[in-house]
Amino acid sequence: MSEQDDIKKFVREKYAEVVEGKVNCCSPEGSSCCGGVDKNIIDLSHGYDRTEVEALPEGSSLGLGCGNPLSLIEIRPGWRVLDLGSGAGVDVFLAAKKVENAGSVVGLDMTDAMLEKARHNAIVGGFENVTFEKGEIEAMPFPDNSFDLVISNCVINLVPDKRQAYREIRRVLKPGGRFAIADMATRGEMPSDIRKSAEAWAGCVAGAVDLDSYLTLLTEAGFANVEVKYVKEYDFAKTNEYALLSVGLVGVKT
Image (cartoon, rainbow, N blue to C red; front, side, top):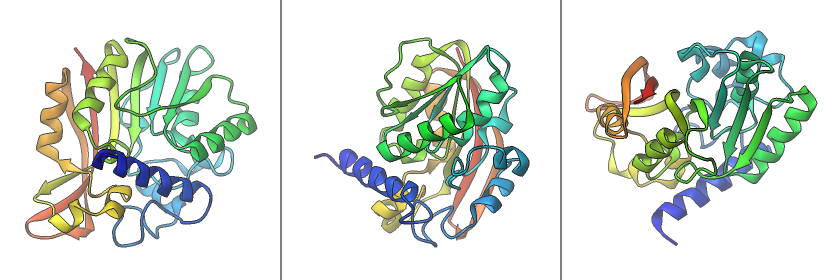
């Protein structure tokens, strides 16, 4: 098994533990952007509307995000939207309300427990314009030019091969399609002990890349009008030489 496979296996196991209630976040407190923080506080501090989230089926929001990708772009009725790493379905359900009955939203996740939870939530909530599919971001099970919008919340940082992930995002987008991503990035050189830690990978930290490199990869993948909507530094992982960032990014397929 390759190092990339090992990382995916560890991440899959950790997120299964989250949905099963064995742990309250993706990594222990102190090594994660979300460890030990109440999910309602996370929802509010990262751009979600408490009323909208509380109207969803119970358990749709597991407090794993690092931002609200839906706040980065105006979603139009009739759009077909893809959510990468859809978890228990919070962003899928919120997007489904915005695209209305004429549109549809697909959630993609590689963790069986998450998919089972999300599908249950969709039934409870009566969402008829959503589906959840199993797959990996580097090799999505969708045809070319399938979606008007791709969103993701604190998931791309978990992907070992980010260059391939960006290529796949571009492939499944329609011409002129857009992405809106909330993710983790860094500024400065990440300490090597963190970069090598599997726990930190699952905790949305070790897989983060430098923000400038992130923007370069997006441009090289064929996206235009790439824009940084916000940057937030985390105090728990900040030194004079290094900072962990929560960022919001948008762009268009050329």
